[in-house]
Image 1 (cartoon, rainbow over the protein chains, first blue to last red):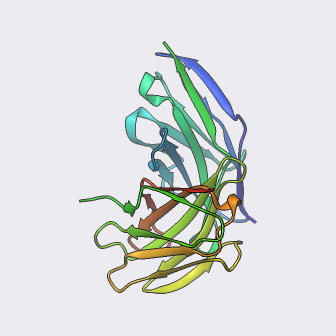
Image 2 (image 1 turned 60 degrees about the vertical axis):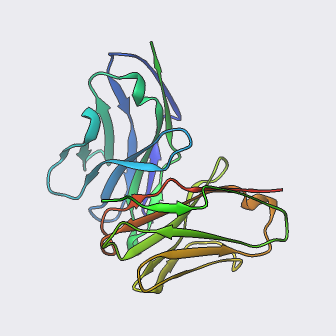
Length: 112
Length: 112
């Protein structure tokens, strides 16, 4: 079965410093992977997606993620955190039959 | 283009009652999926509809049901509500099955 593991439940960074959110996946074949963000009391917003075209994927709001098959990882990064990046982030894999399987989420706090 | 809309945004019900939630997908999208989000279980797949047919179902009891109309709008119904059904219910739409899913703001259901 395909699944994702988010290695950090909470990440705290200072404004202007880099953000790294770690995600490992398990899959028997090349998966479709996504990062979604959820701001308080809001739905999920797509940040970026990987579908085997390029290993480095650029998303919205300065986020990017790198797919590393050898490490089964899909970590999300941003060079400089902004206060508006405070939210919960979900790493997601598309499993068989088009269902999405979500990681447990990583809460990001940005300190002024 | 308008995003996914869900109504109502908030609901309060009592145990034993039933509830119907509505989802209008992005114009032109034909696939609608439903997810339940709770603090304890995270985000879990409920079911997916395409062309008015339920294509996939998650591991939820039969009290959870849904349907899709010819205009792709979807409803989900929960009968005989239990306290544990309190959750944020998210709807997502995609152009076709397997395409990127775009989420609505969710319906917050509270069961008393």
